[in-house]
Image (cartoon, rainbow, N blue to C red; front, side, top):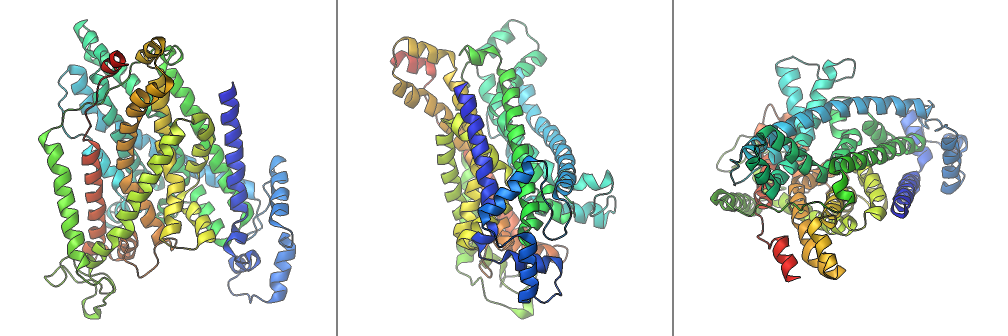
Length: 582
């Protein structure tokens, strides 16, 4: 009961803190909210002192930020979210309509993600159930899909199916046909991510003793496969809820490409125009969705684990430690390719303009061609590695450390994780940029603030299952100290899988940094940065595809390196040996 009360308190505190910080956005940014509202209402009207004063009086901006927040929150408790500062419309119907659109899109994308995840895991599941599971690199296709930029995938889907083939509408939200392309753009990367995590867990499950016992007892492969899924899924069930909420609020880029009036795009537009009631209402709805998804995931996980979790009678999945030759070669090849491209590009000038060779095809002078301004693509890729991949590694490491700490304090950190996951990275970037200004540091902090929840949820699930393992009950019975159990059993069992998860998320973190750079919240032009270079080249993708494919290829190489590194397990002693030595 105490843990449940603590978790509820952290959820309430985290939600209130996020909404309060969002409410302080105009004052944090130093911009006059009255001027922003005036420009949003009418770009032609002169910002005279009289006009600005009238808006300030109308909106009550002569009050302090806390007074404004108190008035807004009091209305929320009565079911009144106020009126939009820019349009004058009631906020609640607007955000409910936008949330309905995003939930519809989320459900369609989640269905695609689940179907894709099942398809990616099916070969491992079938071979494992039959006892013919082969060791080697797994999850390459899944992780490659997870690393594809969503806004690039959305653009390519639009070009392919809407512009060239004309099978589907390119934008809008009027019928079922308008749902297909944005759902695919969101569902394919999410399915790759979920499929990779489950596929990483299944070999360890099939290596457990009960599988051999069931097979020798005559159980059918179908029954063994069903039991393996039930054993493997609980550790990643919390991530399903986080992914669902991320699809709801984090789909800003996809909603912008397809002109979908969803809750993420609504929040972004409100942030840009400093429409506080609409922004606060949108963020509050997103956070509440995150809390509900987290609670549902916890309930589902407890039902899947059954009485084994309550009775501390679970078995601990051990990672498969066999390493094939290809697993050793792939990371070396990816590292060499990245080093060659980056090293070559560092010897070239990324800012030099060649006006006579704009969007030029690859030549000896420009091995990867030039962009729309005549700048060498190879040079910009090489110099942009530090701003993208280097910073992404640091953010990934920081997120891993935070997640490991949070995983051992789930009742305290669960609410903060659900809340942080519900905030779109773009909104976090806007808030951080308002405090620190746009730049690499601000973008790094913003991405770090929203990148640790999935790792923390994974760590918390593994900690709970490990502590409920049957062999640890025996350890406690023979008098092993809590510190021995923590350092020798729980921590090693959690650190490895979460580290592999963190490495898998490295390309996604690099992409998030790139997206903030594209929106002007990260590295500022003309700094060479992969995401900004990709965004600048997208309008010319039909005429000069090499300019857009170069940063995409680097992201995919980074993803391949992350996948190959995540499939290199470290041999460790079994719990039985540790129990004897304890």
